[in-house]
Length: 490
Image (tube, rainbow, N blue to C red; front, side, top):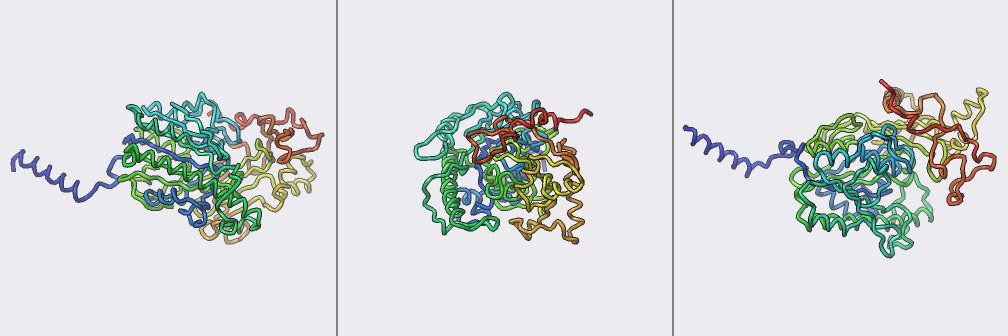
């Protein structure tokens, strides 16, 4: 066979393989493929409130249809169930303590790089379309920020779908990443709803009464509005012929009921789905993943190499539609600096099945300190009293007990698993420069004055009040959050 014949035969073979045996995603070179990317983020919606994850009462037709076209993640976790910390984690690839935003309404620490900084350096246009709640602006250097749009008869603004649509009509020469951030179903809810209280699904950790059902019915109406926003985005993508060559991510920032401000799975285990036609095979995966994984995923898609991040690229999972990813994911709760401020910090570690939660300021600890003759601080005791029945240690088997109703921490047969998780948690906390240690002091954190423990704001009297003699009593006694968690000099 001469050279010409060899080339001809090779060409025929390649053509035959291309027709009869489509190349799978693992061979398609996702790294450096530089696709256009959309990330739709809902606001305050629990994973338990999605049809895709088993709740057939809730109105989620858009995400349900989307899930059938994409890869559904069963065990995707944020690291803190509150808006600014969760969003900052998603956009930095770092857990809350390390990136500096572990108190709501605060900013990441100086020097931390963000999604737009990483991607713009790799030639991407990076747009925020909707709610922000991340800062500072000189680190979140979006190419453009399309602001939320007020609409008649809706309690919150809509995503800026008209601006998104106009951009997609003429996006320019560079690939782009658009973070589309809804304000639904976050309260304030609609005042009226087509959903009947008797038809809602009440999670077993909620009190099943008239008020709960009425609130859930209103919540469902706001979920319906978020679904309409997502549908509008998907329609715009298809209208501009971008469906087949774009990656679309869907998630919510954190859970709501017995979820927000906690480290329960109802707050941290999020709905997470990815659609990429012909690249990512539809299905479901148990891969243990984290919001920290998004930034390294985007860096690899753009052709870069992630460095010094807490997350790791999801591309191996997307290429194989599953597989092993993290051994553990972690959770943080800090309830200083919010409307209903109090001192009840939590940390948690999850191995995909077992979930260990450490509560650092419990009545158990207060009474132990009191019995030892220690003076009990007013603010610490008030924080512990908010959860009088919660012990220092909680352990849940989320496979057998997905709603985390049965604490196994004191079961002798669980001692080994508990110790393994506890050891891992405190190892991770030290590596993150956490301000907490196992038996160390619990500091008062310096926050925005209106949310300080020793201040009252007229706007939030219903959520927080203290005796007059306690106003201003923490002056000079608080620590700077960023200084308290700053990386230690090597």
